[in-house]
Image (cartoon, rainbow, N blue to C red; front, top):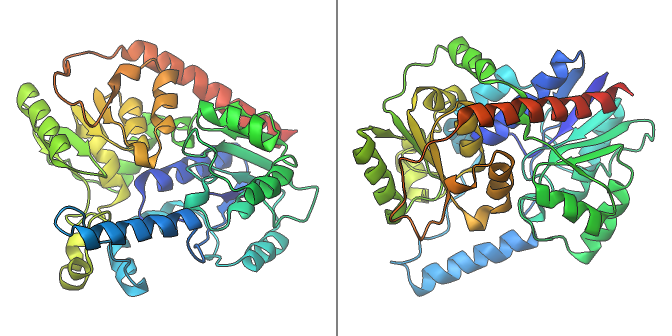
Length: 383
């Protein structure tokens, strides 16, 4: 069966790319023909526009305290910045040409020969991150015989962020799905209350593959050994987090290291891009993966940083990131009985960093949930 996958755009996002790769591999290994329907936003949602206004206002009022809004590189600059992640996309992810409009989605559906669409994962159902929100509910699919499945679709939060108009439109579309599964347990309640559908809580697609699958990727790319033993993957750095990471490194005699551009996407300026663009280049996806393989411990503030720490059985601490959505963290940690690994960014003192993880219990849960999640998805496709 030919299947089209709908997810977030294929950009320089390690977790986003790996969840798409993992979902493709799971479906391919089950005998299906698969490609990702890639797209690029035509504009920004209202919430993102309001956020930009807030950032600009705060910077104007207090430039020393609040950084200016980050510069968005042009196409030529993006090609340089994303050259390593683009290598992964073009080597390991089968995808369409990039779509820029609703008509482009309609044309792709008509000409693609798909017998099923799978929507997910990442925060594909979060309005702020999606200018084609209704298309993530398959509004462009006119053939009623085509199967519609949401696999580990994520709202990114436990709050309902859709407008009344978005809710009405997406509710009607969601009720046409053959199967709806969500990544966070809170998504089950959101689907029931606002979309009128019964959803099932499943694992993120990255967890459908094993550690050995990712090591094979690392070896395929001949990725060299990492430069340290304490991997810190921090998307929103600050002095408190830096001090906590240093404390853990010193207490455990570990060497801290990162796999991120010297000029991080969240904080780089126009001057950075124009005068030292090489410092803005993202390391490769397998360099990021190798970090989990080589680390003795990790400190992260990202969902997929947490996921891969679990997959590679590395003692980890995850620093909560409320602005990016906390339910992503709490839901996964609850599944694996690891809630005590979640730290409050404002309370990083007096943490018992020697607290162990019972990996036998964690791996048992992972094996069980992986089998349940995979069986549910493949059974629906085979009906």
